[in-house]
Length: 68
Image (cartoon, rainbow, N blue to C red; front, side, top):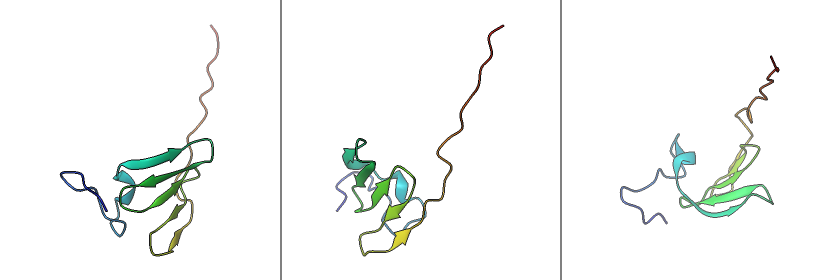
C-alpha cells in the first residue's frame, strides 16, 4: 500500500506507527497510516487483518508552572 521511498514500516513491524498518515481525523480521534494501520488517539490500533492492539502509551503529562 505504501508508495513512499524508502517505504514506511509494514503493519507487522514493531515500528508500524512511524508510517505516514494518509487520512487524519483528529475531531474523530483516528488516523489511517499508509501501511493500513488505523491509529487511534488513545494509542490503540487496528491492524489491516483485524488484529487489535490495545492502547499502550501514555498520552502525555501535564506540566504545571508556577508564577514567580
